[in-house]
Length: 383
Image (tube, rainbow, N blue to C red; front, top):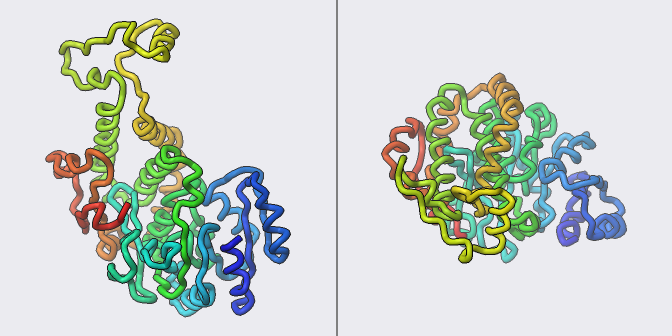
């Protein structure tokens, strides 16, 4: 409600219409919004289709020249909408989107002033949770790699022509994917420094739970990389991407799971000693009785399962990813190397074991010769 309270007075001066997409809520949101804001165009969905599904539902019903995306847990500051509209209206035709500034609810900390992408398709909000003014900020109208989907304006026709946000993402990294696709298709994104919203970070997404979100992050990063790298660079970089994925999976599997030593012993080496039956948990004894044998190792860690689940989705949807990749590459007007001269790929130790990964001599061999930057996670964001 706070979001709409701040938004509604800003509509009339720019002749805008507000659309609220309800993602299958069961908490009374529909009645509350339609009663308090009768002039809002309301689109109720029968189930939660995620951020990308909600955006798609709104776009289908829009005939506007420009479309604006605003998170429900964001509060636009005064003149936010006018600044965002002015930014895109004043921009050259090859600018497809303009992204506004996002700060925390206090207005003192950075949430989004631009972002960086890692070589394997992950991304970070540059300066996230650092004090405002402590990081160099893009000038108004400066190029950015992608606009944040929680505060951006896009020209509707080219947005739809590029396919909009990929609905397979559900949530997370869909704006990064769209940013990359836009750049290689000949478009640009710019920063609207005076279009400011205050954001309660993760207020909605926390309901998914860390491990469910983790599956989305991992699978979406992989499909972003597989779809968008040009042919030559994909061949160069895929080795480092999949070596990284396997390295992380290996780290989780061998350090966080029951009987994990069985996964690391050498061929013909002595098997790990299995604890006697009386020392095992009731759950373990029931599982063994049902299976009829002692398992070599058990995946009982959710982080390990998260990695497997993400990759399982990639394998099962390979045809879809390949088909979407073909569309991206047919539209290509810029090489990736040209794009990464503007926005270098980042190599950032992000997960447990990544410091070892980045020092690994095989990984260093597999790294492609492309514009890049090595940084520490704490230099980019504060967690």
